[in-house]
Image 1 (cartoon, rainbow, N blue to C red):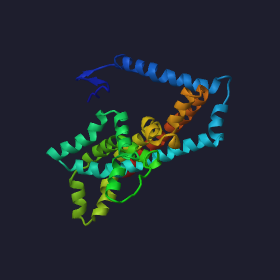
Image 2: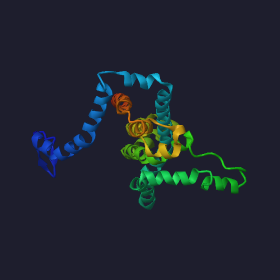
Image 3: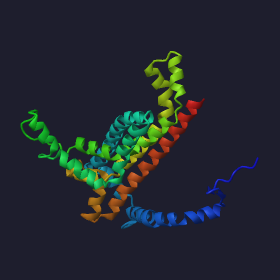
Length: 288
């Protein structure tokens, strides 16, 4: 039996050369707007004013920069955990829903993606500021006497970022849950498994690739998030993206900014490799 070609589009087979030619505009765009600027920045971090690794050493030697990097990792972990806690029940309900309810839930997840991140961030500022909706509601209910400082706190940054990145967690989990046959959980319960055992032994292992993909996307996006932490967190909750912007725009220290970008890039690549191996291992164990 003849094996089908890997390169199919509209029922036609394309050679590798033709496929590369079709992808050339996209590859050219990525090269011009991403690869070349990134390579230039990394080159300056290593060879300006002379070949050196001093800029990378400075990032780890000075406590203020090390604290920013650790804060970035910690906030990314918290955002990923909160997004997972919020996304799993929503994805589960969506996977078991049909008709109007499914449409409403899907709209609630997808509509924020069509709204500017800046608009959503300013909405959170309106809610959390000292004279905002939340403080007015708490004062009106008699719970507090004076406004509480919600804005410019780590909790506000985590909450706002989790809201913005929630669709990137919901959609992979929903896809994984949709792929689980409804007969499997029912068969497990008929064999005497409790609801918790069914979840632990059947649903969770099969949904784990979607959970892993969602966690990876949210965590990596949270590491480089700029608008939301800059506006919601302010200088007190500075993350590495804000620090890079400060070094470029205010300090004009391009080599050090390149070093920060290089450190973040190496961490992202390493984390991606680890996640990919974890997914392969989970799939192997699940089918063994």
